[in-house]
Length: 387
Image (tube, rainbow, N blue to C red; front, side, top):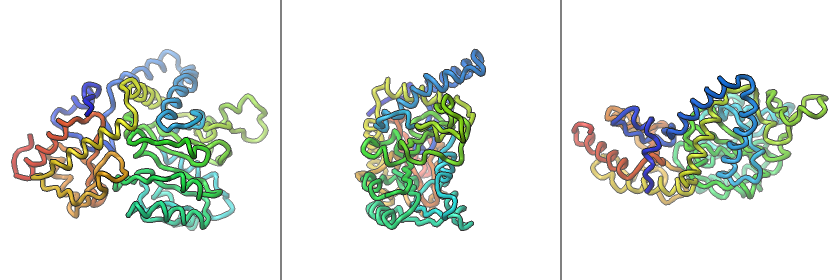
């Protein structure tokens, strides 16, 4: 297993005794991102308005290249950036025919941004939404493909479902079945959690993710891979979307031909600095998504093997360890809220979605971390003091 704790000294040292097991939600950030945060401030102080030459030049080129490398994209220029994924969602929706009620195929396991927005449109009669059950996952992809073949305008589906940790595989078949529909893969729980290879259908599928979770760069830096030629003129558009087209004729509303066409407007570039630093650190440490995933799986296996005496029943695990999955374990517990509360009092940080209690594992964890977590859980189960 890896031992990279020394690279997370600021986060791990900020609250000694805290056992953070929510690596699917808020990862600690490596120390280099703190240096990048300060560097962004200093760069703005030196250059003021001229800072954008660096931000939209060398900095953006490095971040695009780093993200593209982990997604196996043929062209980094297809990537756009925004402060959050909801901005991309609304921009993609603005590409649909405004004169027809769009038909949307999705699942019942999508994250709140998409689930809420689709429900609100449906509430007003502005969209027809077909929700495929995300569980059992083995049947989900087949049902998505069948629904897509019946005709739709937008398909939005997670690569790893946030409530279970289950991963969809064989997504190229969905891309083939999508027809003329816009296909969007939500990869937030897959990017840098498990290997992602978009090379086989990069020309067919949008892919959205960000730096908040497994990329360990914090909020404010999400990205969208935009297939060349698809949805060339979003109606929801900001002036950054014209970069690359400003030098040409200005008749009408110009758009850049690459991923820049999905940009919005002026944003805080600090998160780009952090993501750049985190991606550079990941590369310098010799890490990639495959190694990170293997490390997390080894930690999850150790955790599951040591649950005896903790009161947590491994039979309540939603997705078996050996199934295609992300880097967290979800347990379906009728008293999940009470479990989370008891763990929090013992300074064990977990995450809960309804009856699903989730334990996430990342590169800042070691075998010792897992053993300490299990020891503390056993102490809680026996009524002892948290150590």
